[in-house]
Image 1 (cartoon, rainbow, N blue to C red):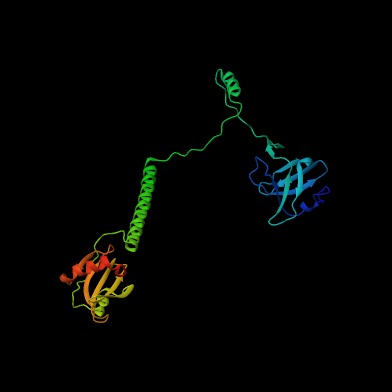
Image 2 (tube, one colour; image 1 turned 90 degrees about the vertical axis):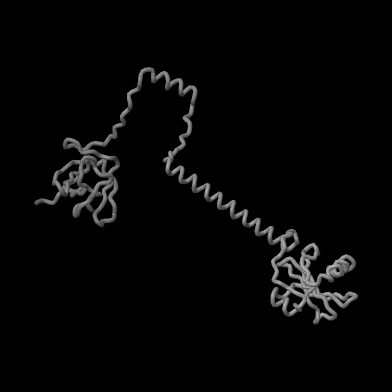
Length: 261
């Protein structure tokens, strides 16, 4: 069998198979073998059906340099194989028939609205999904409001404890005139401030507990022998006393001695 005639530029297709890009419309299997080529036509054979077709040389473009799995031969136009002939493929655009007087309405619309309005995509939600998201958003909003309320309450309670804005009576363990400093700190802990103030009958030991909002007064001849006498609130008012006869004296001391406060 004689060597097929191969035109210049297509010699690399002499051995092996190749594919067209874009694929020829109307042919399912896009794998070809070169049969012969000249300056005007290229004859190829389908590798699966062995059917030969002739392609005008002007439609054949560049050839890829990559051979794996096979070469790609570019086509300058999209071709269609129809009734044994290869022709340029034309995509058919169907036009919808116009209704009566449609032309006049379209002309009037172009006059009134020179440019078409923008189209916004709208996705309709189903009833169940819409209710679900509404409930979810409501629950989240309610949770946020509850958290903010708790934060404000805690903050206000903390500030009230710090600055004396609350008048709620503190909960204290039972104290009596037998409790000295050691037993007081055993029940209430170490005070933030411990002051000894001298008075006419001895002195007062002032123990300040800011977290509890109270001040404990211990009365005695000396700092070490002082015993529990009374409890003051943030307004320096006596809210508890273990020495009933001592209350009047203590009030007089509070009113007359600013250093006791």
